[in-house]
Image (cartoon, rainbow, N blue to C red; front, side, top):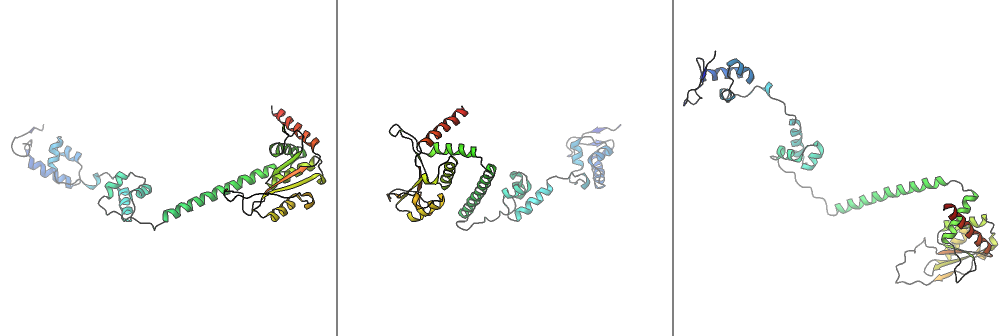
Length: 294
């Protein structure tokens, strides 16, 4: 049976294991360590089960390589230092490696800081403008795609569909009776050529002939009046005999008008002669649409 005693005041804890002194055990422990034995095997071989004593016996002796556990972050640390030497910031390294900035800071704090790259004056503004232009182009492309898709869904119109569209179009944009003007008449004014052409197609559907059609152009005097008159004659497909005198609106230079430029062609008023019966038909059809909804 092994007897362990401590001897106070000798600097080694007074260790004696059987007849072996601390120095003897130290010599044996070092020899075993240099043979690449682990602490556990040395402990069992020498029967020293006190960790403090075992630490003193092995003091100064490095553990063998095979006992060292590989550190999972060694590769990350080496890669972080490599990226830092390439001039990357903490944010860039974090984005590249996916580790925390606190770890990166510990790994590379001994390395020199990368020099700040200064952009030429105006670079940020140019990049912002480019980004807005690209976003606008994407929105425009999306708008055009949606518009074409909706257009393709319509296809051909039946006579009933065109009739219902025309009734709604007139009741929204056409002239209606009022208490001070009780006599019904057909008048429709719009600046959109598509609206005018649709309304004319509807009039022909309900039996209105060209000889009952009269047109009046209403336009600002500052516009190209002759060009606008020609445009509307081509739009309706009828000559000047169907057009009355153009109504010129006085231009006020102090107003900030937006309807200017080459695309401004004024408004065209369409009037149907002897249209009282047609007006009553429109009013009745509109009431029928509302009643069907209700």
